[in-house]
Image (cartoon, rainbow over all chains, first blue to last red):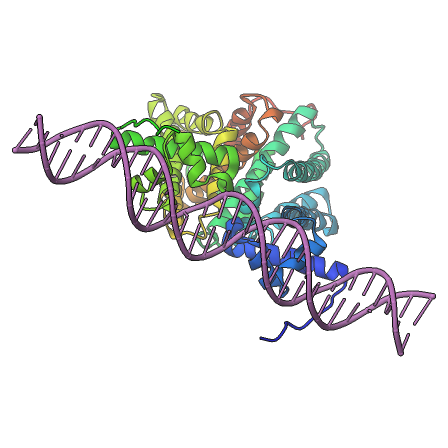
Length: 215
Length: 215
DNA sequence: CGAATTATTATACGCTTGAATAATTTTCGT
DNA sequence: ACGAAAATTATTCAAGCGTATAATAATTCG
């Protein structure tokens, strides 16, 4: 049997490849199935190389978790930032980004599900989770406060907190529903449900779901 | 070394003990740490006995998943049924039951997190998930339709669907938030947020979060 | 161009896992 | 009371795990 051919890559490139292979394996086989050997095969290297780039498998998985979470949050925040319009438009872009691919996506949920169980067990996972949660929640609260001000309101701190908790929860829950059972929802249905629900929660007139006999 | 003392239990009792031990281990150590040996130790038996009650470890974990999910759904439905009042009261009881212990609870979330990653990988998990989801969603949709009728509305099928998706998402998301970071919320805060948000989504007057300068 | 260094492969090790089997104790029908 | 059947323990096994180490190929640099 001949020896496997060498392919030498730059450090950042190889680290990225290894993280990508880790995510592939977790999405496809679950955390249990994401073994060092499986990940190495997927990355096209031999197992020993992993230890050359990461002190342990755990550290590599932590890096993969960090990247996944930051990617999701960044996608939503970028969508809000690049929506150059009024505060309402920015908030809506943020919500839509969270409830459409690639954030709402079966693969993303598989990754998240594989990771979330570690949050309470591994302090590193706990720290990554907490930081990401705070970034997300802060972004949402800012968008919300801007929107309320734009409507001419002077929201109290209590209202901002309560409404951002509620909107955050709504986004999270719809994200799970949509990612777990994507086939049960039209492509834009969840985003539309979220937008209407959020604006109803904030006291705006609803957009088209009135029934025939309101009273 | 002397032999371990025998303790003979009835079949249903022992199966229940093994499932309970499985859940304990998953909650405490994660799915990875819930090994046959660890579970057996927790249950106070030796490993071989597990195979006497379950054809494989997988089947035992599936039984544990089934029990956990059915328990959560049943708790909420029972709360709604035993609230002998108008439709609004029943819907509120359903929501509150979902967002207070033992449904909203760090341990319950740990269990759910341990399981959810299997839903897409193991068809048995997929079937359990789907069945439970449909039961939950049907119960919610019935409660919602009753409530809307009680308000004098004649809700369209589309509205019922959209609103129940939204409420389901809100419950799920707040459940996760509350279970992941119970220390960040007052004991009844999430339930209150949910109740106010749901009624706002349905077009009812809000209950006390108006700010100082509406309009 | 050659030596030192680094990246990569290949192999080996100790441990844990789920499962299978054998041995032992209890229960129960007759 | 006894023997068959069932429940439980104890032991064993093969496979797979993460990791460590040794061998080899590529790169770097004086």
